[in-house]
Image 1 (cartoon, one colour):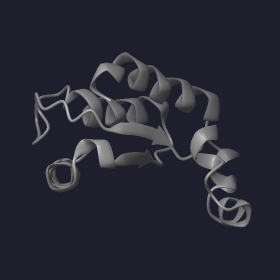
Image 2 (cartoon, one colour):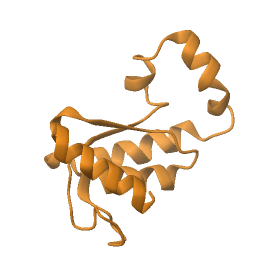
Image 3 (cartoon, one colour):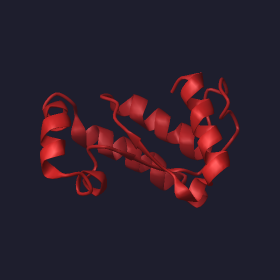
Length: 108
């Protein structure tokens, strides 16, 4: 997650409260999605950005996870996301994001 997005997320959490935000990821790789989830829950593990050492404890999901998919209109999902499901490893992404969400659930 780039430094600008880290700052945006930090500002939103400060303004609205972490309990009022949910981060929905859309990356195509499991490792990158996991890193982004770790960043918004436990803080930037690279200690390079505004979230270095800042555990925001934000709820974090990937758009292909069943919990999120169920909240999206079927036609919108079909038009905007379903094609992506054909070319990414959905299971690996879901498992990676879930792992970090559960690992840092004490903050959520």
